[in-house]
Each structure stands twice: as C-alpha cells, then as structure tokens.
Length: 612
Image 1: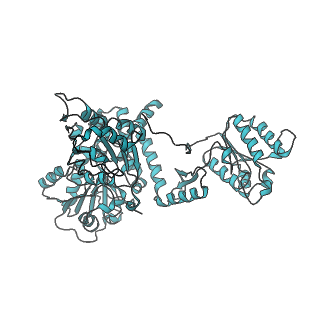
Image 2 (image 1 turned 135 degrees about the vertical axis):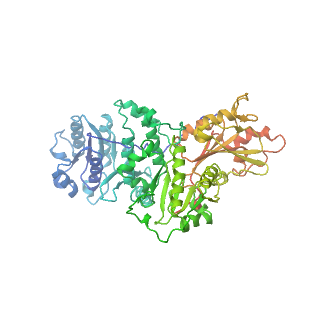
Image 3 (image 1 turned 180 degrees about the horizontal axis):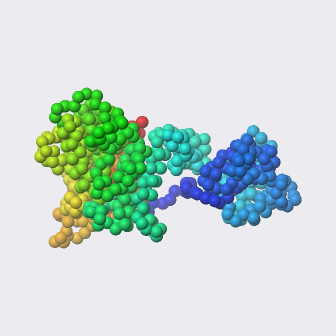
C-alpha cells in the first residue's frame, strides 16, 4: 500500500538565498552579467566580474558600477594562469583564481548567451570546463543558455517598492518555468505583480515590524524566539486569555505571535499597509488593546468617538436618522457573487458603519462605498470573548448617535455566528436588530467541493455540528449513521480530538452519542470555500491526520465533511452506498475513489467562479 503520494520529478528546489558578505563571481560583461551583478548586490553579496577585455569591453552599467566601487571588474588576460590555447587558458586562470577564494558562494557564466557581439560568445566546451572546475571545488554554477551545465537557475524576479517613495521593500516574488519558457515566465511574473495591490510591499514591512515587536519578551536566548515562531499557527486552540498581569514574558510573546499570525492571515493588504506605529502597539497590547481596530479598504482610519477626523469616513452625506439601526448581516461563504441582494443593499446603500468579522474577505469589503467606516473584529486566539463584547458596545455607541450599523458576519449569522447573543444584547439596550440571512458555508462549502450533503442512494440526511463549544469546551458529536452526512464547522484546529471522539470505543464518558465511525469512512476537509485559494483534502478518517501533515499549514476557515456522500458524485458517481449490503463493497468503493493514494488534494475554483 502506498503510504504517501509519490514525488513527480521535473521541479526545482526554490530557495530564498542570502549570500550576505559572501562573494559571487560573474563571468562575462554584457547586460546579462550586469543584471546578475545587480541581483547579487541587492542580496548584500560581494561581486567580482571576470571578463575578456576587462573594463574596456564591459557594458556601460558594469563600467559605472566598477567606478562607483560597487563591484570588482577583472580582465581574464591580466590574471595569472597557464599559457595554452585561449579557451583552455581561461579555465586554468579561473581555477587558479578560485584557489585564492575562501568565501565564494556562487558562480555565474553569462558570456555563453546569444547577443549582438557573437564573436565573444563562449563555446560549449569552454563553458563545460568552467562548470567542471566549479563542481570540483564545490561551487554551485549557472551557465546561461546551457541548462544541462547548471546547478541552479534564476527565477524571473520582481522586488516590490514602497508606493510612497519608491524605496525597496523586503517583498520579492520569483517565477520559474524550469526551462520550458523563460519569456513566458517573465510574462507570468508581470501578470502576478499587476494583480497585487501597489501597497503590498509596505504591508510586508509592517508585518515585519509587528513580528519584531511581538518578540520583545526580554529574553536573550535565541531558542525562545524559535519556540515562539513555531507556535504561531493562526488557529491552534488556546485557552481564553485572562489578565495580562498573570502572563509570563514567554506567554505574552506566544500570544503576540499568534496575533501577528492572525493579522497576516485575515487583514486586507490595504489595512496592513496603513498600520501606524501606535496601531502596531495596539494590536499587540494588553487589556486596553483587546477589541477592534479601525479600518477602511483604502487605508484611511477612523475610530468612533474621535472629535476630529481627517478622513472621508467622517463625511456625513445625509443627516443621520433620529434613531439608529443595527443590521445583523450574513456575507455568505466568501465569494462576493454569493451576497444576497439584501446584504448588498445594506452594505452599499444603508450602512454608516460596518463592523466586520475577520473572515470576511477583502473582495466583499471592497464593495463598501469609500465614505463608509469599516472596522474589522480583532478576534485573535485567546481574546475572542473580549473582542466580541467591545464589538457589540461599538454597535450600540454608533446606533445611539443615529447611525446605521451593519454587523457583517461570515456565512449566515444564525449558524454558529453568535447572532443570538448579539440580538439579546442589542434588545436589552433598546435596539431591535434586523437579521439578514446569508448563504451558509454549511451548504455552499460542500457544493463548491463537488460534495452534496444529501444524495439519493448515498445520504438521506445531514447534521451540522461545531467542533468547539462555548469558551473552548469540547462538544458532543453524533454517532455513525451510514445514511447521514456530518458537517463540522470550526473543527479543523481540533482535528485530533474530533477523530478520537469519532473513532474511539464507547465509554461512559464518551463525547459521542452513538456508535463509532468505521476508520475507512470518507472525510473531506474544505478550506476557504468559494475563494480563489480554496483547498479540498479528500481521504478517510484513518488517513486525514497524515494528509494534513503532508499538506502543511492550514488555510482557515475550514470545515470537515464526513460521510459517504463525499464520493457519490466523483467522476461517474456512486449511488449504491445505501443499497442492501452496500457496506460489503466499501473497500472496493474507497479504492475506486482514491486509487493507490491515501488522499487527494484539490486546489482552486473552476474558472467560471474566478473574480477578475
């Protein structure tokens, strides 16, 4: 039996390499050599150019950089080496020069590339000699236009700049086609860059500053930082946070790093780019920092209660109503086209203030007019209850000033969306909220994954549960029923506990109401349903843990779908699950569904659902 998916060759091991204070040698002096030199200089490397004719034959850029002492430019003819035929001599000269180097990182041969001066182009035999010398000295080598001689290749790279002053940011992206179309790779890179917001580099810088601030725990041991980084998965279960006075420095750092992970995962790029120094402190702050933060999709910020606001959010286009209103609105699973007309109207025509859950995607927030204030709930691990209370207080405060408040929730507000608590809270303070239903991810998520929650011949009913109860307590899950589909929301982070509950033998203290599930029962983990980066992991209960270890980092929000309806529409379908003695064919049924693999991973949406 195949334990794990087989690797498929032909890919590259893409690394982010930092040759800080190490030397990179570039052979050749054309514009390609200048491009390689510039990339190396930006990576803080020491650059040495070795070329025929030295400075006199070099391109204008390399001559200028040599004059500015940014790099060293050497002439093959002026370096010592064996006296022989020209091509052999250059290999010998290079070998002698390399013997003097003790911090050499990489070597790039660029004068093998086609160009206007073809007379100076190095032939294959000479390039092969140089590659052989480099490998003998364990120096990785790249030879332009000869992939068979390369230990590594360069991606088509873009470094993002600060949109405010044009300075470089830490964000770089690279695309490789693994030799199958370099020019097409450049085009793909340009398309990727064009689709990202112009302030994305600033967002990365702000997250870096936030991470540094989060790790300030008064610890000098670098192992402490490593442990903090390792525990920063956004949705790992944590206990509810108590007083900050009771936290040790390490506990505080762990909490802060979790909050950084949450901000990185959920906040729109524009919000990350607009964070000020004081706001970064607020995000990671103590008791006073728990709650919500001002946000607008174009980066301007306005907090309710400010006496002076230099923002369009403060602009009153029409007099406020004498009595404010509160709407509890469902935004659907995430795809903006799944908003109901009522929700769209509430966001675009009626709202003065939008209080949004963190899971509502930027594509939905982008629909809100620019004169409407938007805030995102800061429900990070350990402070969900405190953030929820401050969110409700903000709604009452704004409605008391005559504003129309839209409380924007993921999915449907009544399906594990705390709508009930908010309705009673608002009602007790004189506001009867209007609830606008939304398309629930309970139904939409499985549908986007090609899974029906009910299907004749496979599932006669379905049940919806949560994987976590109030204040993080475990919940009781239903027992196995072959004809039923079980949908578990908010259970991915607690997958080990969920599996133990479903698979273990019944005991007086069991948290399962009914018989145990067979280990081969199908399960699908659906992450970020209806979004462009949707991922579906399909397997069986006894393999889902290994599958999750294989796919790596989670993509919240996620849901678990368990039952035989999962495979009912796969390819030609299977409507015989509920036939008499249908369970006798289950092993064959699973084999047909998964083949020789233990799981299947599907990424993305059908093209028809991609929002341009």
